[in-house]
Length: 199
Ligand SMILES: Cc1cc2nc3c(=O)[nH]c(=O)nc-3n(C[C@H](O)[C@H](O)[C@H](O)COP(=O)(O)O)c2cc1C
Image (cartoon, rainbow, N blue to C red):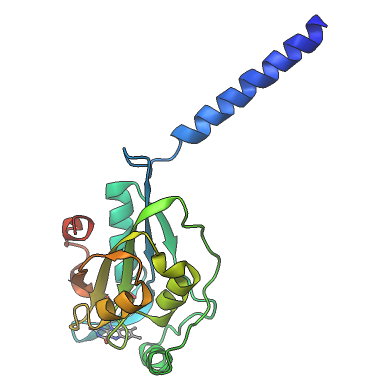
C-alpha cells in the first residue's frame, strides 16, 4: 500500500513539473498572455536592386523578419511556395505577373495553427504591384486573419506598398489591419524596424 502511494506521489510531482515548464518556455507570450507571430514571404536568388541584378542569399523581407524576431521574441512562419519560384529574375517576374493577373492561389508548404496569436506582423515583397499570391493563399486558409491585429510591411524597388493594403483589406475584412510600412529592399540592412512594430 505504502509503495503504491509513493509511486502515485512521484507521478503527480512529475506531471506538475512538466506543466510548469511548458507554460514558461515560450518567449513570444506578452504580459497580457497573448502571443505574436511574424508571417512572411520572401525569395532568395537573383533580384533587381537599384538598377543592378544581384544574388540575394537571404531575401530582403526575410532579413527584416529576422530583425523583428530578434527584437520582439515573436514566433515566425515563412510562407514557402510548394512550387519554388525560379532563381532567374525574368522567369520569376513572368510567373508572378501571370499569377496576379489570374488571381491565382499557389500552394505553400506546411502550415501553422494561428489560434494562440492575436498579433501578426505580415511581411512580403511587392510583386506586380501587390503581395505575392501565395500570401493570399495563406490568408484564405486562415479565415482572413479574423479577430487578429495585422501589422503589414512591404519591401519593394519603387512601388512602396503598391495596392497591397487595398488587397489585404479585401482578404482580411474581419481583421484589424494597420496602415502598413514600406521599406526599399536595398536599404533593409540599415533600416530600423521600429516603424513596423509600432504601427
Ligand atoms: C517577381 C517580382 C516582381 C516584382 N515586382 C515589383 C513591383 O511591382 N514593384 C516594386 O517596387 N518592386 C518589385 N519587385 C522588387 C521586389 O519587391 C523587391 O526587390 C523586394 O525587396 C524583394 O523582396 P525579397 O528579397 O524578400 O523577395 C519585384 C521583384 C520580383 C522578384
